[in-house]
Length: 171
Image 1 (cartoon, one colour):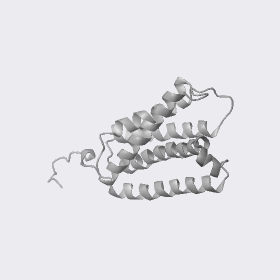
Image 2: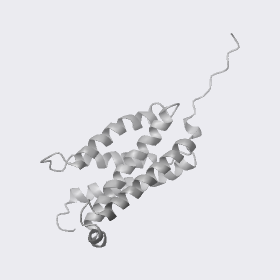
Image 3: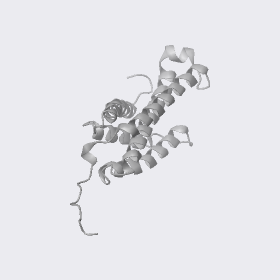
Image 4: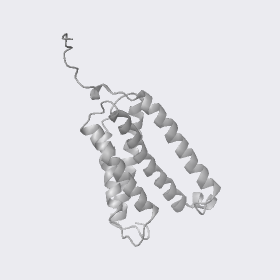
């Protein structure tokens, strides 16, 4: 293990990477109008990443805590949209936007960590105020916004369609 990398930190990072990888599979499924079999893995790993983030020592309010709080609020809409309301009506776009947003937050943090920990990236952007860091995060944001627009338009899985009651002929 690297210096300062505890078993808990390693677990948290592994959850994050599993969530991000599964999230990209889920995103691909959205473009094909399908609920991916990886959806539950994505949601569980991403939620677990958020929750374990609160278990690190907290000495002050940080952007990571803010991201965690925002992520939990988004999950409060995403999980019922999928598992309670079955993506019917407006719950479909709420699920898509929310799932993509929590994926974006994790990818944002991944980029932060990569620029902080990978020597080659750290050399070109030693601080988060560096232009290379801003360009990288800007590209990630633009990619997620573009994808989100496509996904909201295309994601209409048959699984979520409610059964239609028999048409009434009484007027």
